[in-house]
Image (spheres, rainbow, N blue to C red):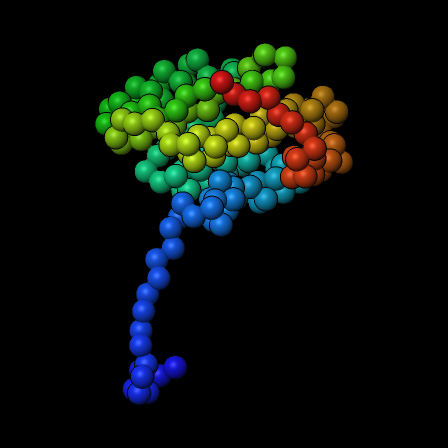
Amino acid sequence: MREEEPGTKWFTTQLSLHDPRYRQKLTDLREENRILDLISAGAPLPVVLNSLCTAIDLQIGNVVSVILLPDEAERDSRATAHGAREFGLHVFWSASIPLLDENVLGSFEMYCCVPRMPSRFESQLIQRVTELAGLAIRNHHSAGELGGDASECKRGAAENIRSGTIELKPVN
């Protein structure tokens, strides 16, 4: 249609991001498949964890996240929180990354500029990142125990996560 044609009318339509037709896409972590591919390929753990943090930071916006492993968590958590306060950041989320037997694999912390609680949508993304971080850390430990080459095991675990055949323990 060209503007100069007689009888041409222009109109706009607004699509709500809360429309149920779009809800499934909004609750997905946008970079999840790429991150699962990194886990499957045996990428170094820092690369996978940094990719998780970057993905959620970009998707939620105006947040900074960090995943700390148990040996670093106590020491670095205090330093991270202190540094965040110096820059005017507030704790947005902080939780342990649990192993199925209640042991802790690490911690996931998020900071933002304005004190607030995560929305329901953000909580779902946080839950998924926590699950993926747990998977990545467990696979990293498994690779070390198996002599460094557990790519088949990792591929199987990542595929099970993608297909939903593994149920990960929710973080409280």
